Amino acid sequence: MLLDQAFVSGGNFALGVLLARFLGMEAFGEYSLLWMGVLFVLSLHQAYMTQPLMSLFAGKKTEGDQYLKSLFNLQLTVSAGLVTLGAVAFFATKLVGISHDWAMYLLLGGFISAAYLLQDFLRRAFFVKQQFRQPLLMDGVLYGILFLALVVGYRLGILDLITALCCLCLAYGASGLLGCFFAQKAGLLPLFKAKNKEQILKTAKEHYHYSYWLLGTSLVQWFSGNFFLIAAAGTLGTVAVGALRMAQNMVGLCHVLFLAMENIVPAEAAQHFFEHGKEKMLAYLRRVSLLVGIPVLGMLATLTLASPWLIGKLYGTEYQSFSYLVGAYSVLYVFVYIGFPLRFALRTLQYTSPIFLAYCGSAGVSLLVAFPMARAWGMSGVMAGLIATQLLTILVYAYFIQKKSAELTSSFTTKSTLTTPRSLST
Image (cartoon, rainbow, N blue to C red; front, side, top):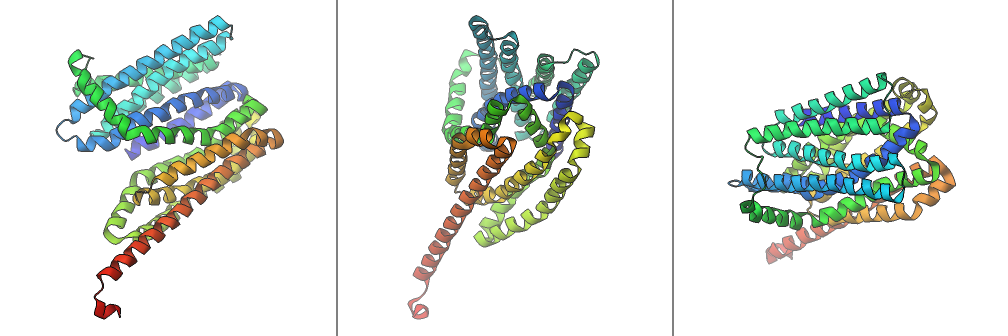
């Protein structure tokens, strides 16, 4: 799984470099705005489909395959709905006279979202079945087709934003079809039949009851992380969004270490908590955060110092004037990194409402100040706002961890007093 995650992180970085270089800053900014829409749909999909899948499948000891089949039917319904929605948006925009390019963006966005979500679902379905070769092959086909198509289109001089979106649609579609082939071989690719309706409805209700808080969290999380980019587009133009996404893509190399923490640290923290108590768990989180923090800081410092040279080599000279954004994003990612162990602590303590509250707070602040800060201070205002929302999130996490720790300590002291023999307590 870690190999596949590293492969995906590297593939996404290379994709960002190619699109930024081949399309130019303005078109890359437009692409970044469109891709935010795809990521919005993905966040809802993960909250309703894949996050419950990763947790619920372990309890389906005798009915795991039947559960996956019914979930597969739900996924096909979702993907078909997105294609339909994209087609409706296309014809609606044509009727009201919106430009042909934007009508095509909406149509292709529906197809890309449908293929992307299908591919993401199939990857995670294979993960829960402990089958890791299939997702790796799916990702190999995805990036192989995508990079080849983009390079050929660029060499032929026909690569524009619509062509790039067609390449994405082709690549994700091919990867999804390969996943369907693997699923069919594993007996997990059912056709929708009337007799399966009851099981499908049961699975849909089970996922809804599991995920309705996750859906709310995904909504506020998306707004807290992306509204400043929307403000940048609205006040500074799509070139600014392209520059911001370029810088984010550079420091996004740290995601490999972040993913490794997400896959390993929470389980270890929970084991320390249940075996040794709260203090040992917090000590473990401090220790592992320091150990991983050293390479993270080293990577961020290297990227910041070398950013003018790296940007010129990877993205082209038109992006070099925005190299200072890499340093700003590096500061932002330091705060992002600090938030990881705090979230792990809250999840281990089974005290997850502060995570939702923190996202609500940062989303509210973003909605209130994003446009004023972008208008007043430009790119500096956007970056300051992003950093401020992360700092707010950290302060909320730290406050509630301290509060929960005090409650646990008080509870333990009370129990100890009640169970202490009178002769020893006097």
